[in-house]
Structures are given as C-alpha cells and as structure tokens.
Image (cartoon, rainbow, N blue to C red; front, side, top):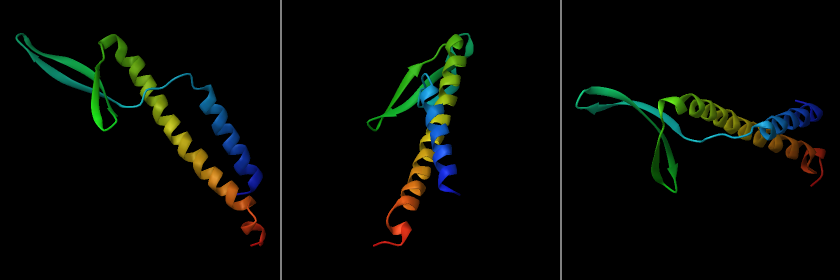
Length: 102
C-alpha cells in the first residue's frame, strides 16, 4: 500500500475514534436467576480490573444501551489495532532503512 493511502486511512481511523463519545469494555452476560416463583432473567456486565472479575447489575431498561456501548468498544479496539498496524507500516516505509541508508 502506498504511503499516502496508509496515512489517509490512519487519519480516518483516528477521526472515527475521536468521534466516539463513550464505550464500555467488558461482556454483557444474560442468565437466569432462580426465585421462589420460578426463573427470571438476570443481566450483568462482566469485566476484569487488575486481574479481578467485577460485575455490575444491568436492568432490562439499561441492557440496550450497555449493548450499544459494548459494540462501540469492540469497534474502538479494532480501530486501535488498525491504527497501530498502519503506524508501524508508515514508520517502516519512512525510516532511513527503507531508503537504503544504514
């Protein structure tokens, strides 16, 4: 890929990342909770913080927003990886080694 194209792709990815207002890292878990009257759905956000699993209860009304935020986080993670790979390629193609100098 040409240098100009890599720089432009990285610029677009960075712009998209800057436009993201917020995201949540973790997993939304939906399970059943056994109660005296039967089973009821139970939702929680699971995330690892400093090697410890933390959970946060998520109400039925909050589940859609949490899902949206988690989807945004997955996109942000993908963008971070892409930006990193593009930056590596850009640095390698613009370094003195790429120009044949040592």
